[in-house]
Structures are given as structure tokens and as C-alpha cells.
Image (tube, rainbow, N blue to C red; front, side, top):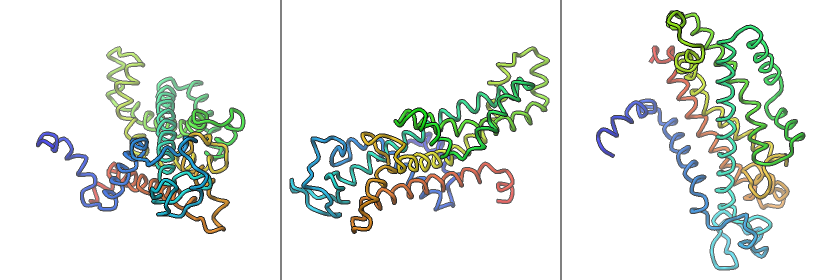
Length: 296
């Protein structure tokens, strides 16, 4: 990379310099993202194409030899599906659902939080009562209720998780926005005749979005766990687009018979992926905390 490119990366590198656990977590996040993105290229087979599956390859242990002479590094499941390939595709689905649901929830929450801050009165009351109602339900329970009504599917899971995410963002943005509204630059903008819409997006948004971006990685890891829970319970993504949670569920019946790899391998991948994201999220949160920066 050129010298100007390295200089542009220096502020980002400074966040993780001296924190080996956070740096390792960042490497883990990048690796997981690349595997998920390149799953169709990297995976030895398309594990959900029935034409590529052979029941005679079923329940092979790790490093077991398949009927075509190839070796299954992490074993196969009952229908001959390669576990390594299934995990790669499962990571792809889990990350896609988590990122889209968090993105939608963040956009809706930020906009409604800004509207509540600017309008106040009955608009603020309605939005915040909707927030109170939403956060009064545990996230997974709320998603279960919504999926029971609308049915299963990737789009339904994304919608159900986004409903539980927007309220936290709206409350956070409103809290920061109310603090910013008391500052002189907002009063000066209003005296200058600047519209509420411009104040909202040109003045309030840049200052209110920072706390939301700090908790964004943690929200993604929480969405991954929630989606895995829903899929494990059988109400999440369909079997044609399985996630890590559904892969764990598929091997649950074989644990006591010694075929541990069917559930354990996707379970370990899920734990490592969430752990990597959480470690990075903790470091970003600490870096954004002015009190900890002052102590350092």
C-alpha cells in the first residue's frame, strides 16, 4: 500500500495498537466476512444443491473419505452434506440477516429519534411510548411473536429483528439530541432561519450518530445470536437458506450417538464469530469513552 494510503489508515490502526485481543478479534471479523462473502467460491460443494449430495456419504467423521475419493475435512451430516461447506454458507446467511436487520433498525431508529427530538410534544410522546412498548418485550420473544404471525423466511426474520432494534437506537438518539438542542449552535441556526429538517440532518445527526455507531458491532453480534436462536427453534430461516443456528439444530439428535461434529463445528464457529465481534465492539466503545481516554 502507498504511503498516503497508510497515513489514512493510521487513525484506525491507532485504535487497536497495543490491544492484541482486539486486533485478533478484528482479524477474526475480517476472516469471517471474507469466508461468508466468498462461500460459493471457497466451499468444496454447494451443500444445498440436491444434485451434489449422496446419501452414501452420510455421517462421515472428520477427514472421512467420500464416495468420489475426496476427503471431507469436517465430516458430513445425515444426508451427505459437507459440514465445512454448510458452515461457510451458514455464516453467509447469518451475517446477511444480522447486518440487514441492524442496518434497517438503525436507520428507522435514528430518524424517529431525531423526529422525536425536533418535534417534541405529542409526536415525541407517541414515538417514546412505542419505544417503551417495544423494549418491554425480550428481543427473541418479540421476534417469535412476529414470526408466528407473519411466518418464517429470511425477509421475515430480518423484519422481526429490526423491530426489536429500532427502539434502542431511537431512545439513544433522542437522549443525545435533547442534550444537543440546548447548545448555542442550535439556537443560532434557528435564529438564522434554517429549517427544522436541515437542522435535523445537518446539525443534530452528525453529533447524535456517534453513540449509535459505537454500539453497532455489538448490535450485529446480538442479531447473529438472536437469529441463531430463532433458527435453532425452527422458526427462523428455511432449510434452503440455513444459518448456523439451523445447522446446530440439525445435528442435535446425533450428539448422544457420537456424531458430535454435526452440531459442535457450527456451534464453535458461531461462538468464535460472535466473540470476535464483541471484542472489537468493546475496544471501539472504550476508545470512544472520553473518561477512559483521559485516564490512558
